[in-house]
Image 1: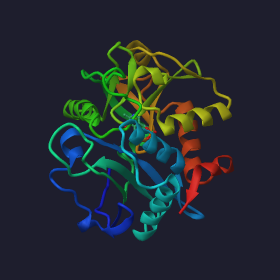
Image 2 (image 1 turned 90 degrees about the horizontal axis):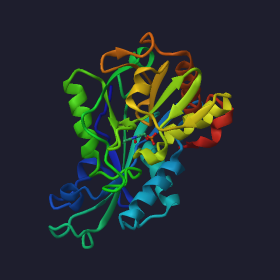
Image 3 (image 1 turned 30 degrees about the vertical axis):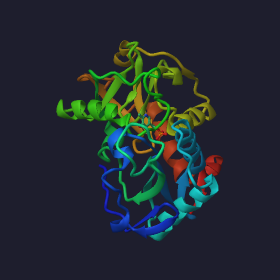
Length: 307
Ligand SMILES: Cc1ncc(COP(=O)(O)O)c(C=O)c1O
């Protein structure tokens, strides 16, 4: 579960400050209009100390998203990278979840963000597993959401903008209320898109499939890592349009995300996937991924930034 304790220190607008002082004004533009962009990054305990997984890639996505929404970050990527390491160090964390956020601060009320200054903060919190620890083995239960994933013609789904997460909140809340762990959203063309905070993969006849970026998904960094790992393990991976029936008839399904890591899916809409146990290929990829993030596989050391 998401075990978050209030952090002691936050990096905000260039300085490490006490978390009690890391506040925003009620007229913060992002609070009213969702004008923010954020990241979720994990830092793992390794034998060389805490290491942040694919930090640069996450920060590039953050910078690209900020640029798209016309928010010029007043710090370079190198400075933000240093800040991320500093906040882990200052909170004396061995492993944690990092949440950088760029947003429009207090400004005039009105949709036009021009006069709301761009702010940036990085939070580091303790986090265990996203789902129950034992579900990393037994798998989570999912439902096909009645909510459709936002469409690229309305809001670009490949950017992690704060406002668009209201779509994920609707899907997640519906799933939880109905007794499931997670929601899987179709896009408006009735094809499989992704979870509320995860990408999705299926396995059929030993081949691995995942929806392409054009299906209104976030280009997940975990998704990309798992594709690279799977190819290195000589699995065939294809980005292919998937429909609901592909899920019901899959041999294995798993979801990927920084928070969720590689999580097996046990059932969808109450129907077990195969026997309803973690499948053999999911087991291999989950282990390989966890080895990579923890610095236990020398092939993936370049994905780690030591703090
Ligand atoms: C909607 C959505 N899809 C997929 C992902 C997985 O992305 P990543 O692997 O980069 O964390 C996330 C998490 O950030 C997400 O919010």
